[in-house]
Amino acid sequence: MNLRPAVAADRAVLAGIHAASWLDSYRPYLSAAYLATIHDRLGAHWAQLELGEHDLLLLAVEGDEPLGFILAWDGEPFWINTLHVVPGRRSGGVGAALMAEAARRMQERGRTSAWLDVIDTNTRAIAFYQQLGGVPGAVKEKLVGDTMVPNLRINFPVLRPIIAAGCAR
Image (cartoon, rainbow, N blue to C red):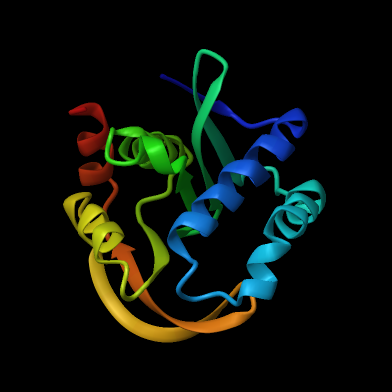
């Protein structure tokens, strides 16, 4: 598996991974009408998304096959905006590798902690983040697609456990 910065030419691939992940995992939360247009919506989102100089967008690939991506906005703590893995490749180390690489790169920039939000009923993802040293925080309503959904804040007070977990795979 190769982890590399995503480039402009990858935007359609990112949108495809994102849509596949939402169709697989977010169906209980989003309206059928919204999901019917998910490819167009996420295609437009990724086509226009602007990244700052220190933001991080990584793509995992194996040969020519895209496996997943992570988007992290710079700051202290830095915000892991989104992590998506192709549904058929979940639980195979792709997410851990992306998290570890993002944490490593942000640590090189002097960042010491991170956070993310996850749908509060996504027990599989919550357990994954806790294995990486994530600490559950408050629950708040957040707009996901066209629906307000309870999201659990996961804080990573230190980056070392994320980096170590990714290296162990």
